[in-house]
Amino acid sequence: MSVNGDIITLLSKKCVWQIIRELRDTRCGILNITALVHRLNTNYEYVVNCIKLLEKYGIVECVKVGRLKLVKLNTDNETCKLMIAIMDTISSSRRIATT
Image 1 (cartoon, rainbow, N blue to C red):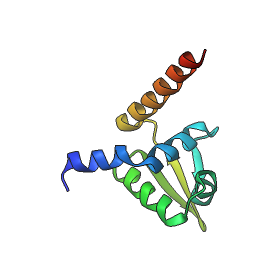
Image 2: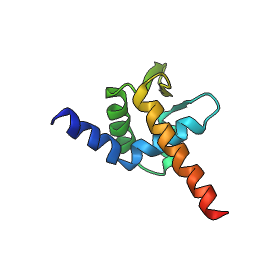
Image 3: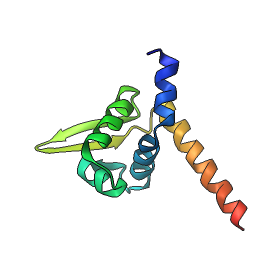
Image 4: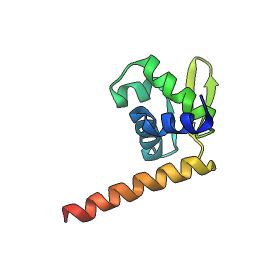
């Protein structure tokens, strides 16, 4: 698959946006995979596949601590910054529309 195809795949996956939102909304930007599975109400394999895609683009970093696999939002990554900006813009426009 081409780079453009990979980017389109990344941007079109609902779980990718959900994972970024959950990590952004945590105090430290770090969660373990099991917590993400529970928060997203989905299965482990689906979340792991989305995390692998995010990791490929450097949007998240995974760290293994004992048996735990922690996922951290990489806010230094340009793609990550842009995706967060998109989410913030959409949520602020929704607030304006409802008032």
